[in-house]
Each structure stands twice: as structure tokens, then as C-alpha cells.
Image (cartoon, rainbow over all chains, first blue to last red; front, top):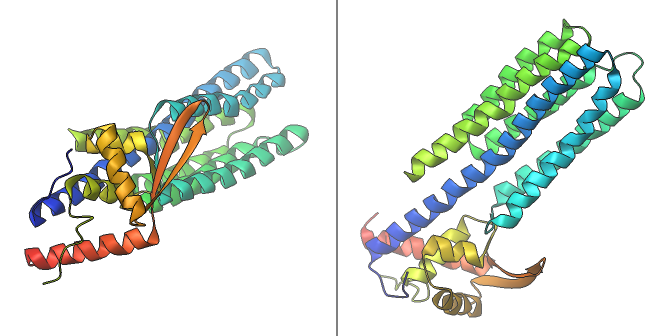
Length: 196
Length: 93
């Protein structure tokens, strides 16, 4: 793009085109963390469920502590590899997820320390926290799919009240498919379609 | 009719300001890619926008790589808003 004088109509076209370009990229950037967290949590839920139920050894649950590290490595490498642009909404979403993530992490650690009575309730709490985060993200990005998926996952998570023991993990995995994987793919698909 | 801001009424500077208006900040490489400009030309235009007080340019290092980050200022936001309003009157919106 050269530095040249333009007509009024051309300038309006440039403004519209540039704003649309940056929006398409924001949407794609938002989709990736959802997919990374969604797939890793779903896969790990099924792996832990299989290992604990087949060996009757609850120590396999310590595999959950891999989750933050796996995701941080993936997201950090992604951040390094691309030119960056940040929106105010990006910053707000990041702050909300750090806050909610910290609450979820604290609850997870506490439930590992005290495994006496309601240890499995942590999975329902995590789904509630994630659903709240998704709904807020959806309102900020004006994406219906986020708060629809958040409402659906809360409804599905109620099954956990009637499921006993390790099988809660299967409901948990289903919630993460609804809450992260499906919205992530929808955003990615919409972002690609807008670019085409 | 009000005159258009000559600093913004230029293809590359207007493209840069349009991008920055919808972002909190953007790196030099991001702006270069999106505007499909050359590094040299973009540097000159960023310098003009910075001298006018429309943007701030921050130079830092990410690891060993130099990183130039641009952000629109309050003055830049007002100037861009006025430019868009003037364009609308020119085009009869």
C-alpha cells in the first residue's frame, strides 16, 4: 500500500475494509484457546476415567495437574509465532479467564487435599465456572453460541447430581464438548467463511 | 465544508489508523501484513502519525527479537472521529 492521496469514497472503503480485517483475526484468535482447552480437558477426562475405573487407583487423578502445563505450553508457543494485535475486549476476556481460572484451580487443589466427602462435586463447580466464563465471553464478543453452550452445559452438568463416583468424569467430558469444542469450531468456521 | 485532515487523508496512514482504532495495540509486523505495505514506507508513515500525536510507538524486545508496538492516543481518536464525520458530510450521509 503506497502513501497517496485518496478520494472520500476510497477512504471510507479503506476504513471499512481495515476494521473488518482486524475483526476476522480477533475471532480466529478467540477460537484457538477454546479448542485447546476443550480437547485437552475432554481427552484427559476420558483417560483419567479409564485409568481410575480399570485400576481402582485414585492416584491417576493427579494427571489433572498436567492440564495447565500442557495448555500453557501450547498457548505460549502460539503467541510467540504470530504478529500480535490486542483489543480492549481481548484484555477483558483474558482478565476474566485468569480470575475464573484461579478460582477453579484453588477449588481443585482444595478438593485434592480434602478427599473425604464431596470430592466429585469439584467437577460440577468447574463446569459452572467455565459456563459463567463462556457466557461473559459470549456477551463481550456478541456471540450467541457461547451463552447458549454455557446454558446447555449447566443443564447437562446437573446429571452429575445423580451420577456416583468416577463416572462423573464422562458427564464432565460431555460438558466440555458443549462448552468449548463446539463453540470453538463454530467461530473458526465463521472466521474462515468471512475471509473467503 | 470542513477540510479533511491532510494527515489522515492518505491511503496508508488512514489504513493504519483504522486498524488501530479497533485495537488496543498492534505490532509493526501486524500492521505491515494487514496494510500490505513495505517496512520502509510504513516506518515513515508511523513516524508522521507519532509526531502529530495521533499514535504512540513503543520499542521493546520479546526474547531477542525487537518488537515495535503502536497504540492510538486520545488525540488520535478525536482526529479520526472528526475525519469520519467530515467524510460523511462530503458523501452526503
